[in-house]
Amino acid sequence: MSSSARQILHDVFGYADFRGAQQSIVEHVAAGGDALVLMPTGGGKSLCYQIPALLRSGIGLVVSPLIALMQDQVDALKQLGVRAAFLNSSLDAEAARAITGQLHRGELDMLYVAPERLLMPNFLALLEQVQDGPGLALFAIDEAHCVSQWGHDFRPEYRALTVLHERFPDVPRIALTATADAPTRAEIVERLALEDARQFVSSFDRPNIRYRVTQKANARSQLEAFLEAEHPDDAGIVYCLSRKRVEETAEWLKARGWDALPYHAGLDTATRNANQRRFLREEGVIMVATVAFGMGIDKPNVRFVAHLDLPKSMEGYYQETGRAGRDGLPADAWMAYGLGDVVSMRQMLDSGEAPEERKRVERQKLDALLGFCESTACRHQTILRYFGEEHPGDCGQCDNCLEPVDTWDATQAAQMALSCVYRTGQRFGVVHLIDVLLGKTTPKIEQFRHQALSTYGIGQSLNQAQWSSVFRQLVAAGLLESDMQAYGGLKLTETARPVLKGEREVWLRRDAEPARRKTSKAERASRAKEAFAGAQDDPLWQALKARRLELAKEQGVPPYVIFHDSTLLEILNRRPGSLAEMGQISGVGQAKLARYGDAFLQALEEAEG
Ligand code: ADP
Ligand code: ZN
Image (tube, rainbow, N blue to C red; front, side, top):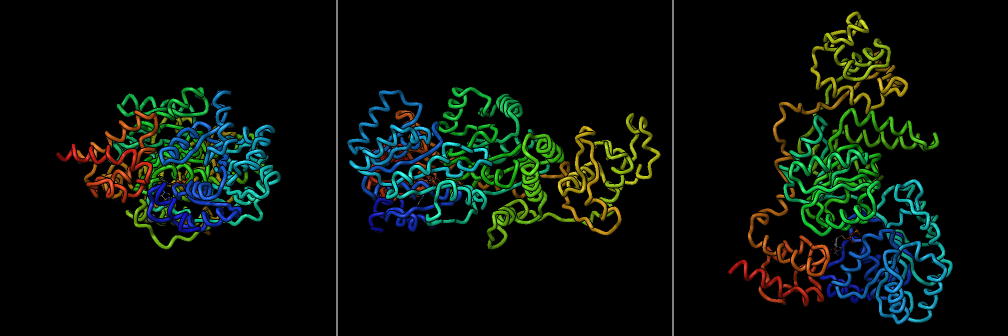
């Protein structure tokens, strides 16, 4: 049986070997077992249900919330010669009827279906007929974390999916998600009645992603410098917190000549779909988006994810950055972060509608994320540790590994800052507090007679930027908090007391000074460029890409559905001279070889000749 699984892997998908747990999962499900699969984005979850669906007799049903992406998923399977279709509200009655006909006649290997459609009584009745006829190979429940009511992907219909188990107890179920945290996992098991399913938990490390956190000075220009230096032609996602920021940032980038599009839940469906479509089908589009964008986006060559605002939690950060580099090639996760973010995120949490208990949890989650931002340890290690996994050692790739950050004994500075907050009455913002510490003369200082304070001018051993770094870290560490009653002025928390009394030391990271900072090692070593070393300027590479785009346009599918970048790179490097050699390339299965083999051999010949 496993040899035929391998054969499908090779003949249909064009891959030489299974990755990680894929083989065990495929064997378990193909033999009729239930499974819960936790695997990071890009880990290769799709094969885990696609191959068993092809191995078992009957039709494999894939439940997915991603209506706008089903077409692409199905097109990708058709390209591989798999008989696939989808059923959701975007189809008219006639098209839907045609597909039910195919179902009845057993003419499909796989059907993608939206949960609300699946749960309709007449569809369930149809499935019973299919079971008695061509048969049901399996149920795959993709994006299984949608059962969790605390995630922003919550879909109430997912909870009703237990009906599958009740009405079709003999059909194996496989639930899949890239969400790593333990509470969500437990919720999936409970809500989908998967107590008896075997769990397959992969490492959540994403070794090809380089994480980097920079101190925010002027976020937009920093973003542009990052794009110019490292991703001038690449597709990527820029996350912002609010719809307004999304629109402003997209406009700004567009005005500066970047191919940028906005995406947020406030845009009408047609615009959202059109923008998503362009992002998927064209090369080098930058999507500026809120977190409403991203789930299920299986564009493999997203080369960077940038955060202009803080995500809400480590889970959020990990999911959002995880959309980069699904193809395993180097990708960047870049974030600009500053005091303003900490203050506004805390305020947003405090002023939200959630019950107090929930807010407490969210505050803890934010604190964990701030700890990550301020950490001087390896980013990969810090992320994995958060999800309860050990990382073997420093990654040698992230900002903190490439340019180790100094820490300094900031106890005295912290005491000055905290007592300045106290002496000014715990109601001023950081700009004014720094003015007082530096002994400046401003109208506000005169108005409140702050020259008379004992903390006036005592902080001249540090400059403006250094003080701002101190305040940011004190807020991030929870020694100071912003006071909603005082329009966001800073006040002390209980944890500040031992510092003021000299009972606790404070060590802070020494931020690079923006003014003196030259291009850093991390920035120079652009990994996207490393990955495509030589390729970008190679006319052959351009020719292969042009041919791919041509074929994609002819068929109305995204270019990566024809061949992934990694396949194209292998064609470039190995220069196959015959169809047989072309068939050896990873990602070239039999159907694609027959369809495109000649076209790419010809492209090679023309460009070389
Ligand atoms: P996920 O759904 O877990 O994010 P995908 O199923 O989209 O991941 O797979 C990620 C990428 O890895 C895809 O480009 C896929 O074609 C590729 N891939 C998956 N399994 C293998 C394999 N065994 N060998 C080579 N490439 C693979
Ligand atoms: Zn590291």
